[in-house]
Image 1 (tube, rainbow, N blue to C red):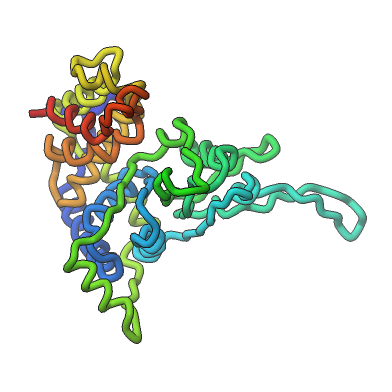
Image 2: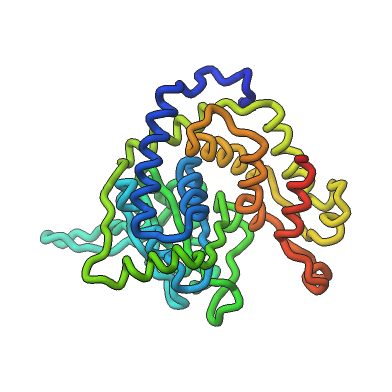
Length: 335
């Protein structure tokens, strides 16, 4: 394993490539903004997730354009997308695919694998927490390894492959919490809130007329793969690397120096959280057209990267401690 620092990246990202990608991403953001109103932070964090090559979990109440955002991203980025509506009766084979027994005209019988909707470039897992944990876990291998195993045979997924899952708050009836192992596979948990008044007014006018705005492809799958390769070539200063490590390690109650973490956190983020934050800050820098990420990027992306990789203890929940308070305390060590 090579640990990347600013001094040991063999091929730093060229300025011309960064500027070209910035222009392309600005066009994509503008196109998405024509149909998604008042969710600039959500759009940016979702684009950063895709630039980092990861998956995103969008959490919010019904009617906040989570599903429409995913559909719009598929169009704008030129990705082959599919949608699965998660329900309590959904089975793993409904997502991954299954083998069927076929008989040839000569009477010979053989199994044929029929691919499920997971064989796409952008999978929208709509209301993922309405399916049983067994079905939710069917995506684990696909999200981590970009392939699935059926009847002992591995099948590679298309590249790029991303899962953008939407989830209603757990307080809603008929929902199941996602397994911790699957939560850790999501690079970010993006909380979707209500738009402000001006954005909601623009949305009201734009979506209730005779015609609605449409979006067109701005990028292609090849463009996104090239952007993901560019992200990994963005240099990261040693100070930023050390800050990411300090932030993640401070979230582990057994070794943290923060009293709030030791008292409130049941279990903290693992090494995958540091990897996710490292890639995410690079993606944010590229989205803004900068040559290297800063501590501001670390502070801005720590909440969506860490909040689903930690758990509060029972006593802390009873005392009203929130995960945002804990993550805020962790960000405080960067000052």
